[in-house]
Image (cartoon, rainbow, N blue to C red; front, side):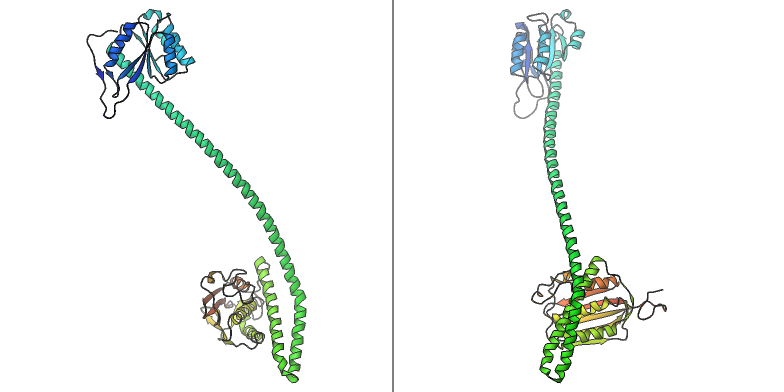
Length: 441
């Protein structure tokens, strides 16, 4: 190395804590080279860090140093040392034996003819090749800075690759965990599906059995109940002549029979509506005789409770003669059941092209919290459990009214009473429709 005057080469100084110097490994069997390099490095600075020389005077010593300190960023290797190609063998040993591909290696030689630059650069993994005679202080500084930047970039890439590998490993673990969770969820869903299918089969079988039971009840119970009712009527006629004290008990019997017949009819109709087996048979229907019969029936069944019937001039609707009586009987029955002594009011009025049926009682009323659910099947209000009931009446009422294209509304105050309002359609304005049956032409 040559130089005309001392040269101090530094980059822009950085503020903050003092940083450790850059270690540079110098491998050469010439003591003067070590001394001169030490002097030059003492005046160099890069990114606020000086340079620290680590000396090795043979290839064997250099291998030991690099084995113990693999993080050295830059090394200056002499080509000719204990053998003419000792430096070249050292390069291959560092790359292949020590597997150190990060360190930047600069070859220096005082005998360029022994190892031609082109051949060396092509055959060996070196990063620069310099002749000692041309390696001035400036060129040495430039070579070191370039090597350090390259080493720093490699370290950054390696660090990012390491973090990426760790992130990939974590991601694979999370994917595996999530996959296991999804598999567990899939198995749980499969089990739930199997349970649901079994429950559905059981529910379907239970509904089929319920329909069979209701059909049996309808056919097997109606005849005996009719016989009991007829016998009670005959006994009442006799009691009127012989023993009037029996009349009250006989009326109780007839009332109980009537309630049981109504309950059977309600259950059958609700089941048919729920399963879609009910076929609507609409026709022109006069509600006046139906209301009168219902009022008389419930007055007799309730032991003479007062039911006030108020009908306007318009009493005909478009409806099913088998279903609408169920609505009327259920509403009057509920009004009597959930009130004590006060009369029940039943009104029928024309309203905006339709007919409005109103049933009012002054009974226990419905709690506000229960009102949104009173039309649900089998639901009963919290204050109604002391009274007998099935919880299907209002559910059936809404289904029938909906089938007729009408509406049903409940206005109730707990402790004051309940008003049920049913809106039904008037018959179509078509001369081809006649009272008692038929459909619009």
